[in-house]
Structures are given as C-alpha cells and as structure tokens.
Length: 377
Image (cartoon, rainbow, N blue to C red; front, side, top):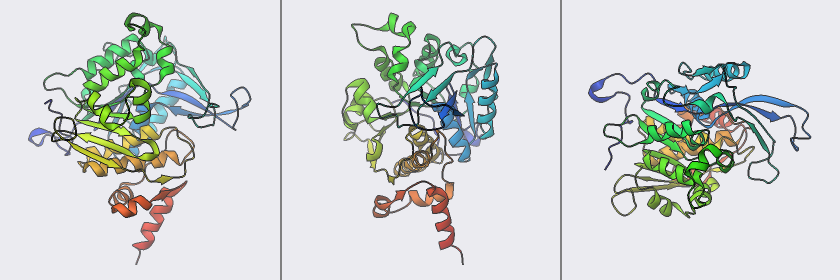
C-alpha cells in the first residue's frame, strides 16, 4: 500500500513547524466576463469583470476559511494578469510563485447567465496560447509546488498543452517518499480536449478519446480524487460509486460527487468496500440554487479544509456540502464560505436535523444571526 502524507495535524514529523502554505493550488485562472442580463452572448450588451479558475477558486475559498494557501501559475504581463494576481492575493492567497509572461496573454472568457446544464448556456473561451498554457517543469517554481501539506491539481491543466500534460504526469507519478499529498479534481471538460490537436494527434489510439484516458491515468496517481458521478459516466462509461472505485483503486481517498444526491467517499483498506476499507455516504442539504458555477471547486475546498483539520470523513463531506451551498446560493464563481464555528455547528447536526437542513440565498448570514440569538443571554 502506498503511504500518503499525514495531514491531520499542524506540525510535521518530529514537531517541526508547519510549512508556509497548507495547500498549494496549481492551474490557470482567467478573467471572466459575466453578462449584465440573461440572453445569448450575441444579445448581451455589457458584462461585469470577475475571475475564474478551478484551482484558484479552491485557493481563495480556503484562504477565506482561514487556511494558508499558495497559487502557482503563469499569467500575461498585461492588465488582465495584474487583475488576476491582485484579486486572488486580495483573498489572502500567496501569489509569489506566479510567473509573468511577456510573450503570451492572460486567458479570458465570456459566458451567459444560464445554468451550464442547459442547452442555452454559452461559453466563449479565449485561452489558446495563453501564458498558463506554457506551464511546465522548466517554467514554474517547482520548489513552490512542494511547499504545502496538500498539492491541489485538476484535469483542466492537463488539457491546456503538451507541456502542461507532462507537468501533471510528473506531479502525479508515484514514487517513494512523495510529498505533499496530491489532490486531483478530474474536471472533465470535453471541449478543451477537442480543441487540443497537439495532444490528441500523437496520443489517440483506435479512435479512443484521449482526454478520458489521460484523466483516468492522472487520477490513479493521486492520493485524493474528486470526481462527479456524471463525469465518470460520460468520460469512462462507469456507473455508480462502486464501479468508479474499482477503476480507481490506488487513491487513498476517492470522493464521488452525486450533485443534489450528495457524495460518497471511499478510504483506505484495499481501496474497496468489503476489504477493510471505509465507505461514507452523505446526502447534500436542500439548497435553493442561484447558479451552479463554482460548486465543485467549493466542495473540494470544504473537504480539504476539514481534511487539514483532521476531522472524521463524514464531517469532511458535510463541510464540502456546506461550502458548495455557499457557492450555489450566489451568482458568481466565488463565494464567502461559512465561518468555521458555523460550519462546525451545522456539520455536527444529528442525522435527522441534517436531512431537514434547507439553505437559500443569504443563508450564511441568516444562520449565523440565528445561532448568535440563541446564545445571547
């Protein structure tokens, strides 16, 4: 069995001080333009500027939750790159390892206001040849990637370029004494792989899509994997948590997300239920969804936050759901997570109370006020 790094305490072996960052997140962040009103991109007259990036979203939410985080990436030496670095740093994230590229631009994208799950949803990416696509073992501060207790990656990075794919293969390669713990969110984006002929041409075999095969290989090298039940079905033809676990026996932790149906986490043992492993399923609370974007990143942040604190598996999944609920009840990609005391209180609810939990827009402030009112003499 591969031994994974201990992330349960605040000190390393022998009582040495904790590293400068608890979580290091590697990946591209882009400036995103959100529509001022619903409708087709062709019909929307104005957009509001924000930021978007799976890994930087995780870093920002973890920082907002009180953890030390670092974001490693490349951005253009342009105004959009300035905006990204300044905004992400504003959340309390260490951006000192972000490199500026004078020859490649910062990626941007536009999207409609509708839910991604609908046919009417549109996203227009302008990221080909971006500064982040030049990320590699030679263009990044690789020392910074070893700086934390957890290194968080996603499958999006692997699709950006051949160099990025090589970087992900290097970081997920299993070797004795590997550190830190490698967290991997599958994030299967078919459109990105279709737009990467430099990846698909040399690697495709027998007409099999390259993206799903690459993502499965990378996931098998990680210590902690997040994957949606729907994306496992679409990418790998796998149905249900048990089938996914059988295809991914190597990760110490496998988190299968079921959307509104909750999530199940597999841990340890022979990596399979019934062989000494642990399996914990937790339903998601009832949520009034404002926008679905960013929920997966928020779930990962909540689960990682609870993992860093050494909480039991059930509490880790509940924290994931609570962070996701924070993202689901606001219109943008990023949301303020619930405060630690509030999240701990809700995560500790008994089974019946958790089943009845209903969260809507403004739930964090409203719930906090209710808690304070109950405890005010």
